[in-house]
Image (cartoon, rainbow, N blue to C red; front, side, top):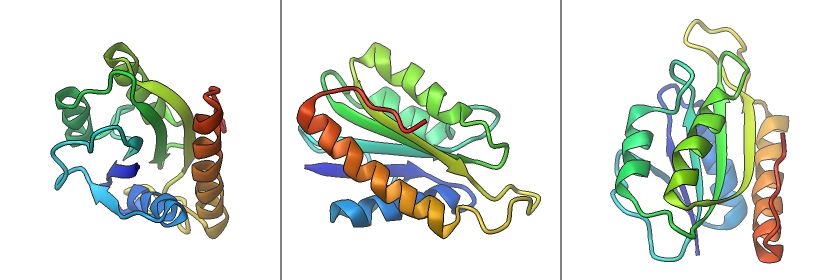
Length: 147
């Protein structure tokens, strides 16, 4: 019923994906190992920010999968602290017919070791809360954003 698919270069997004997956009782799957989505699943997609965009492997994953009418919640991390990758994922998914049911962003540790300690325990707790709220929103079929 739920899938959590992510791309993470530094491990920040992986931590958030695992927190969301644990809340939903599923396993987080690295996009490098995931070819196709299960039929009719509610998908949580996440990526770090690389030049203002989600990782290339996640962009390719979005391109090759059918999202028409699929419930999707987005999450991202970034050392820059802007959340551009989440907005870029939404721009890729909307023309494919995805129903965006929520988005979550938190600070990540950067390549240059700035923002050490991120995502923090509080941010991971917020990610778990985001998962629960997204599912409840889906059940009510109302748009929701945690931004």
